[in-house]
Amino acid sequence: MTKKQPIFYGWWIVAGLFAIDAVAGLGRYNLAAFLPFIMSELGWARETISLAQSLAIWLYALFVLLSGALVDRIGSRKTFLMGGAIVIIGWVLFSTTRLLWQLYLYYGVFLSLAVGMTHYVPVMATTRKWFRKRAGVVAGITGSAWAVGNSILMPVMTGLAASQGWRHTSLILGICFGAVIILCALFIIRDTPESMGLCPDGEESPSPVDCMASAEVSWNIKHALKTPQFLLLFTSYSMYNIGLNGIVAHGVAWGTDLGCPEARAGIFSTALAAAWIFGCLAGGWLGDKYGKTRVMPIGLMIATAAMLYGWLGVHSQPGLIALSIGVGLGTGLQVSLYVPLLGDLFGRAHVGSLFGILTFGYGLIGGWGPLIWARLREATGYYNAAALVSVVCYAIAVVAILLIRPLRANRSD
Image 1 (cartoon, rainbow, N blue to C red):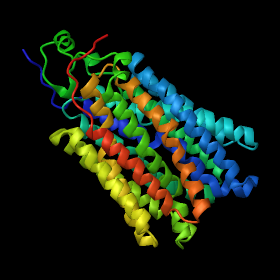
Image 2 (cartoon, helix red, strand yellow):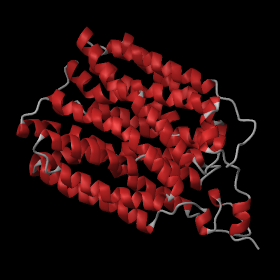
Image 3 (cartoon, rainbow, N blue to C red):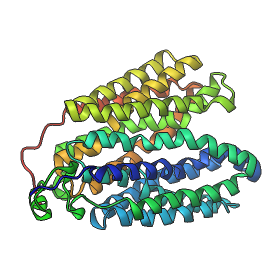
């Protein structure tokens, strides 16, 4: 006799992952939020602090390899529990920073590890283990969480830092954010539907044994890495992030170049984040309905067109707002579909490890974006040339996705 769940537990997983990712990524952006206060108190130059930000990107790319593998081997719950503890440690240590080596160690190493263990890669990998038919929709929901968290909590962080001091703010918020992650891991997150006697998407099954028997055959990591499909995904994910990381890092500075007061320049980041949220939600639904490899190139083309406009037409604040919306919408439409597509191609068993490797490319290659944008700004006096380089990067990503074809056969462990 079949057993039907009134509410599939996977939707509770989605809620828990959304809460986790809404706060987990802030460990990467807190230095940007506290930058004016740290410069004022400690007297460090912007370039000196930027070295810590660059270090954090490179190390994050390494740490997600670890977190992706841990999700596959020991499970999501234990990974988030460890990550939540490291979040608290990293934020608390960061609040005590007084010397440069402490900034590089506490922010560049500890908080990078904390973010790698709790943000995006383990979140997206967990959603793919719980959902198959609705993988795009749930990835769109959870993929928008960091943008929602940043939009709401970044102004809170800067406001509290102004009134209570950045050290006290870091201490209190770090403990709160870590507690959210640990509580969600303890009481909500479970590793797979099979661990609870369920099947992906809440499909009915006579028994856990039958559910396990009907699971899809999965490629092992070594064989998956040798396929042209994975190489194309790696190329796309790495290349478009050169342009994305560039505008994320320099959007506010570009706004001030165009005459926007510093206190209001965050509006350009907000415009990108708001469009990203809509794009993620729409892209997930469209990817499930019409096919992921059909929707992803469309999103990348929108972002490419926006960057082309950035090269040719952005000479005013309204123009930069339009550029930010276009990049956010286009990128959001496709970004949440990488993990669902990985699961479609290679199965769910190693999706955490495979997405960790993709994200390593994000850091190794995409991490050059802020540096490229900064160098071109210094050389030309404008950001428009950097937008042109980003056009090329997004265009390469479009071609890579268009070349992906279905796999003919699975290679199992």
